[in-house]
Image 1 (cartoon, helix red, strand yellow):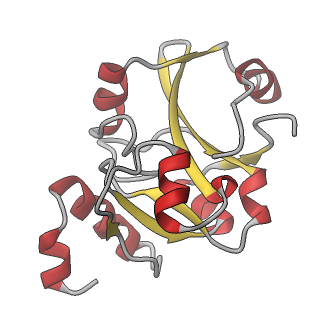
Image 2: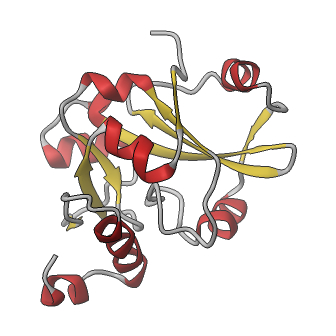
Length: 164
């Protein structure tokens, strides 16, 4: 990303862009004219299937934040994910807990750019799409990537997070 384009991004998105560049991820963060807060909003704005949206959901397991990057077509089976990984039950984080764990607001949580790395699960359904879209740190920023890049970038575990 060139310096001028980088400076036009919100600070949270610039942080994400730096992490992407350091990891040699080619996809650049795009600012959208309208909110991409929900998977349906993002898919509509980008002209892609809702399943190609990598929704960033924060849960707590034993009080610790966990990031689940789920296909927009899925509702996360929290009991199933916790059981597969031998974790304590997953509870949805509050907006305050999400911001504390990620430094980002719900609807714009990127896979990276957080104060500290989070244990991450990447939905295997995202591998069905040659390109997926993830939030870029704000509800109006996104970037293109792949399932493989998300796993590498986050150090996450590929896992089915829902029954299709």
